[in-house]
Image (tube, rainbow, N blue to C red):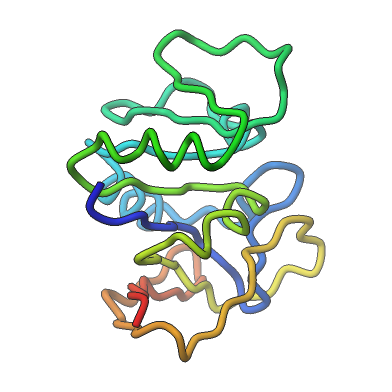
Length: 162
C-alpha cells in the first residue's frame, strides 16, 4: 500500500452526516470522491456500507465491523479487527481510501498518511456524526480546488502528515 487516505466532506464543526446520510448534496464533490477512489480499495464501517444502494463500481469494498451475524456479498472483504485489516492492506500496490463513518475515521486517523477533506462552508446543528478533530499543525495542507454547488461553497483540501 502506498498511502492510507481518509476522504470525507465535513462542515465547519466537522459535521459528517445525519441519520446515516450525507448532510449536503454536492454533485461536484461526489464526482471528486468518485475520481479519487475509483480503482482503489475503500475501507468503511457497516453503516456506511449499508448506506449504499449497491456496490460502488471499480472499487474493492472492505468493511470493518464487530457484527458476526451479517451476510455480505462475496465481493466484500470483511474484518472484525483493525490490525488484521491493516495487515491485509499491505497486499495493495496503490492508495487505499478510508471512507467512513465517524468511528472508522477515528480509528484510522493515527494511521493515515494523507486526508482529502472537502471543507464545506456551512454548519449543521442537527448532525449526529462527526469527523474526528485533529491537530492541523501536524499536517501540511494544500487547497486543491474551490467549488460551489446549490449555493454552498466548499474547498477540496489535501492534508499530508508532516
